[in-house]
Amino acid sequence: MGPARRGASSLLSPEGFFLGKMGFREAVAAGDVALSQVREELEAQLSRFQELLGGNPTHVDGHQHVHVLPGVCQVFAEALQAHGVRFTRLPLERGIGSCTWLEAPARAFACAVAHDARAAAGPFSRRGLRIYSP
Image (cartoon, rainbow, N blue to C red; front, side, top):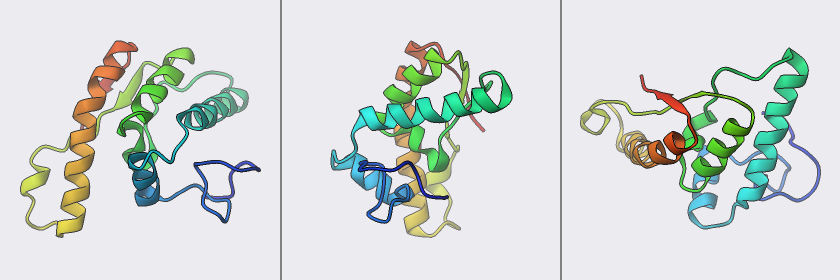
């Protein structure tokens, strides 16, 4: 990851970098992330993709599964629909909660992602996104 755009943003650390996976999740849960800024960032990335490659991506998902977080999933689905993207990944790993070989923090994270993914299926479907799972 490199520095993001200039100026204050709820998506950035004080050093100007995007929040990490846990920092972003915590900020979203606390209501500290402006969803309008999430939408702006998504628009900027999708526009840059189109500028560089001459078309829209066929599918998009979020780094560290942030695209399924409450609130984020709605603006994610809206942005993808606006850019004609038809597919996204729904990170539902079967049996992840019973994987005893995963350390407790990793298992808790995976279970939280699966919970959020199940909740995101509705907003994705309402925006016409087709979902695929591993």
